[in-house]
Length: 371
Image (tube, one colour):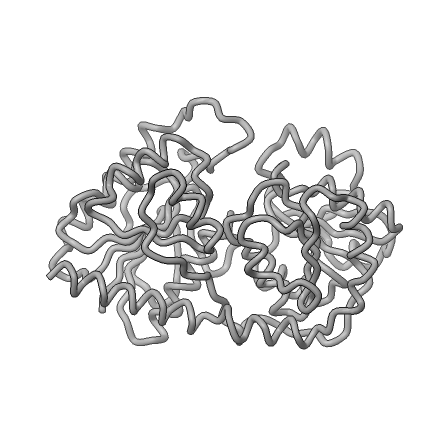
């Protein structure tokens, strides 16, 4: 089978560089999983992308001209023309190469990513990586329902989209290549926050918890909201890109910037716990399964997909949303979690093999339907 994966275009997809977000990481993982299963893969992405083994045509798409989704500042987008032009280039490529493609699988969260793939002479799948918080995107997803199949990344996310009138065929969890995820039996001394530095992820609350418990905290991730970082984070952390120094301090909070995936997994494996005080309903929470795969338990507000990925009392703790006192209490109880249980849960439910098999079954079903 030849699968064309349409990536988010706001950053390159590159095996050796830091991914901008979870959707980019899932695209890379799915591409590698499909290739390992013997399928042919084309990744349609911004110029400069690299996924070993996959074809990546140069389409003249400059990621620097495009903006990531920003749910905290819902002003009209200023890159609409660039978005339309970029996804139209992808459509032109797909039309020219349709005879050799079996399935097109979109992963971008932009209205043109839905509209420009509409009514291609190919089976189309869209994975909805984010919640339906953008009305323009939701309207676009609704407009293409007759010509595409939508998939959510969790049951919680599927319900949100269905409540907006979007037909979601099924939920398919992202999965990890566990051969590349280090497991550490012994817990480390520091707490870790990993993810976008943006209000809905709650890094300021992670700092609050660490300060209240007098425990060291490392924050790693891309700064999505510069005003928020400068106001709520920077005055309370040491900014130090040298991870070894941050780990060695054992005091206060340190921000180490975005990390390569391999470095982030290593950082996770030596943490005492990963904090996910999200103030929104996480559609899935890739950081949560990555942490558990390394053996590190998670403390998270019981919101959205995190209820499905964290097993309360077994692989971490799910906290009543916005209950900061309970969050602190559960961080104190991290040592009660068996790290081997965390790894085992991911091996059983969130492996790359599970993800690839689920998507291949879906591809086969819609190809048969569209004959």
